[in-house]
Image (cartoon, rainbow, N blue to C red; front, side, top):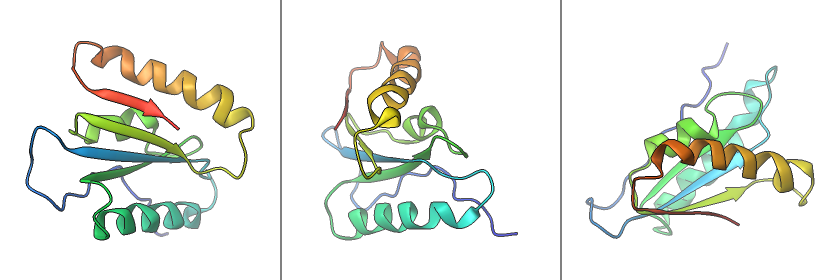
Length: 116
């Protein structure tokens, strides 16, 4: 059975105080490991092309969770990008709730986390 991708930041620049990160959030699948490959490839390309300093992936139906992915990035400027075809239930309801729950333990930390 193929190994599921792990939430992991992908660094291309030396750490600094002004790093940017992106966390791609997709539906995922509890039965099909291939569901994660496209999201991981997209995150890798964002790093390779120099668009962000760090990238991680998160899923709603398989690991890693949004909280786990947020924990792996160290950047002070984090953008959460849902990988869904429309602004349906998951984008409007589920992701904001998960983001609020994941960010609560880090409220003391000074960083910007926003969802597009």
